Image (cartoon, rainbow, N blue to C red; front, side):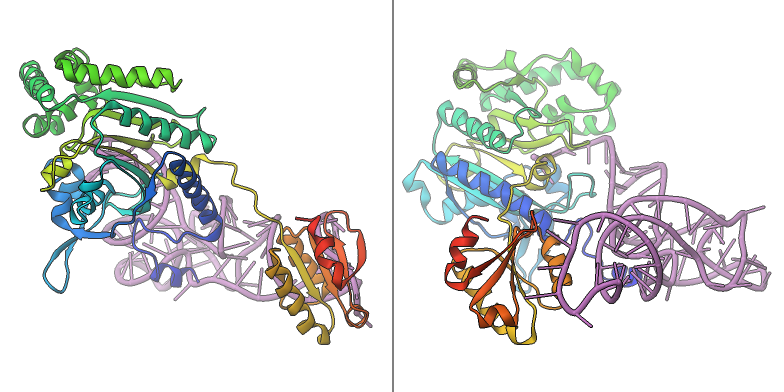
Amino acid sequence: MTSKKNNLQPVRGTQDILPEENRLHRYVESVALRITELYGFGEISTPLLEFTDVFSRTLGDTSDIVTKEMYTFRDRGGDCLTLRPEGTAGVARALISNGLAQNLPLKYFYRGPMFRYERPQKGRRRQFHQVGVEVLGVASSHADIEVIALAHHFLSALGLDHIITLELNTLGDLESRRSYRATLLNYLAVYKDDLSDDSRARLEKNPLRILDSKDEGDRHIIADAPLLKDSLNDASRHFFEDLQEGLVRLSIPYKLNDKLVRGMDYYCHTAFEFTSTDLGAQGTVLAGGRYDGLVSEMGGPVTPGIGWAAGVERLSMLVNTPPEEQRPIAVIPTGQDTTSDALMIAHQLRRKGFRVEYGYTGNVGKRLKRANAANACAAVILGDDEISRNVGLIRDMDSGKQTEVSMDLIDDFLSKFR
RNA sequence: GCGGGUGUAGCUCAGUUGGUUAGAGCGCGGGCUUGUGGUGCCUGAGGUCGUGGGUUCGAUUCCCAUCACUCGCCCCA
């Protein structure tokens, strides 16, 4: 059995999600759906497959996602396609494809699988699932506030508000980043030879990323580095101040983190992460930021945007109280001649909205045992005697008390178990 | 891509200093109870000891490779 199983392994980093775990996923998604609806978001579904350009042109040539984590291949027509590694680029593409920029602002919710060719780890799969939101066409920080409030609301609704922290930073606008980049490079020039290999490579391509290096030597150097916030121009500073004021007014706690830099190049201004210490090395549960340059870079009209995404698997790991489900009612025929009647009664009960477990085989004892394993609240036992008298024997599975009930009244009687 | 750990029953794990039929608990099947579950007792099924190769008279055990899982790095949700 084991060897057979090993010959039929799923692709590395992918997994079968069995009903028990899917219930949790569905719960997480349903909460996301419910809360985002409160904020006026509509669900958008974009293809899992996009032309590779959609991601490679926008995520940045230096990002890890583009350089080593994409599932990319040529299809039979010779087109270069990629399994989406994240959701934002696809939504931006959809905005352009459908001419949606006519109807700004737009608020979209999305969910579904994402693919990243990474080494699997706790809270990290090659195929994983995200829920996310995007607000397109709003330049003011009100959108940032609203989107972060939504994220906070969502996590609270999942009961996670006490184990997560909101970390917040600003990357400033393009001008601010340019000026900071120069300042930072100037500072780092002295330590050039002391930096880690990774960070030395980043000097050229994306020096901001050196800030969140975990290399100890780097951290030492970074500790005294000039801060991005000192390079912000007035517009960027005001934007960030407005955002923080808004969060304070909404009583959303946050922690400033100068070193927080998002992985993808299209971010500007707001960058935020909700983190938890309960997830091993993968502390980030939900993260996002503003990406005013994305749509135009892709060839569309200049369209500001802000959004976030959250990992469904990671959220599921933190949610330890799965939602209660309706307890079933077991329908148990006891004689050979009663099965068709039992099937009919089960059918009728289901049509009335009861959740019904129908035991296919075995004697009464076995079926009761199975009913018990299914956490049934009641069992309807039907033998020849009951059928001929048009009654059902209803057993309360918690107390063991049994009551004979006329078939005509069975719905009413069972209602109290719901 | 890099480093550490682990692969024995459906699950959680013992064990074999290399030697006939490899164990436990839980779960599953049958029975005590021919119309009554959740407790108890009895009993049964289920393993080419991850896979491939090497050493050996003999490998689940030692060696090598490989795959998977896992923890961490990198990076991210």
